[in-house]
Length: 159
Image 1: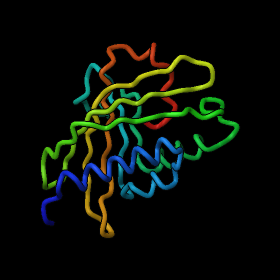
Image 2: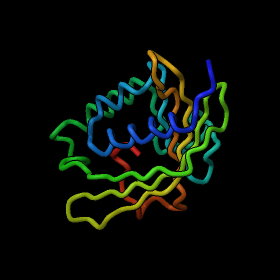
Image 3: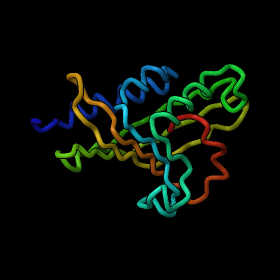
Image 4: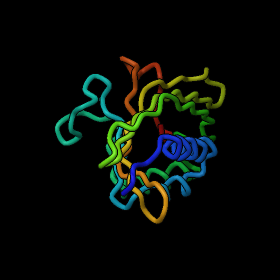
């Protein structure tokens, strides 16, 4: 595979953020490989293995599909009415070309009902692959900077 340019990676990450903000979750799922993982590790041990440490989220594709189905369910109280989010992605870096590993900083602003705005700050780590002529997500981690998560509320949406 030829080296992937940062501009292509940035466009892909911006597209992913737009899909998540617009709650187009089925289209977001289509960006993932069949063996993809989505993880939100503990902020005190972001390098740990989900088999040996507590993770906020450690989903495989089966669990991600179930998560999306729950999020879209109008009777799911955790996200009904759904959160409104706005994601800002910055400092996109290609860390490695083979396999394609990418990191980026993020800020997600979450608005829900009459609650105060919640701000989630951290960095994304991705493993991307070229599939069907485009980039796809094989692994996605959202590593939060907050030292305690209680003030952020339940992370029921996709970071």
